[in-house]
Length: 226
Image 1 (cartoon, rainbow, N blue to C red):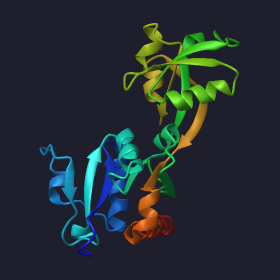
Image 2: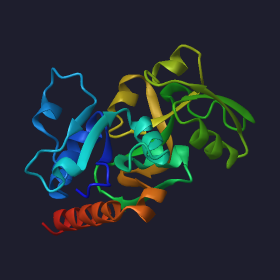
Image 3: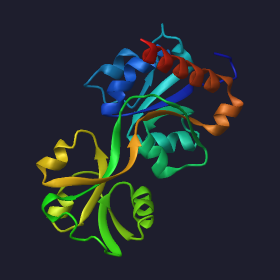
């Protein structure tokens, strides 16, 4: 690493996307050190493995998915991995998503109680529970409906049954969780997959960021060709 350069900071999300991303990260030379995999560790910042391509030239931070976008958009991290749902929800001007990693596939959907389908059709105002207020409002605006969004970060499926909202907007993979909670998927707002995101200013000023983007493009291409 050049003497005048600080290590790059690479942000990754906790949870399912990370499990799928790790093999791809390894192909791109981004290999976390042993502490990263220690289930007992409460650390949030980790070094790259000494023998990996990036080594001391990069550190990895593990944060919540929405925070990945915030760290990268504001330049605290130069790059990271997050779902396209987060990219679309925040729509940060300083955030660029150059590579679709073709992992973490799911969809952002509207769901409502299975026994009440169509009960609110034609309504001009709906209360919707979601952690995606911007995407939710935009979706219903296109339908001519004003959506009052109740912000929840989890247990979304409980909202209709407890009278908090008539619909929810959440990520759906198999649909099993919806079914188990008496809900039915009624429309898809957008398909979702994981993306490599970078800070626009860092991409323009630090050649290492451009090299990282190319490394992930090649890693994705090799996996698709395998």
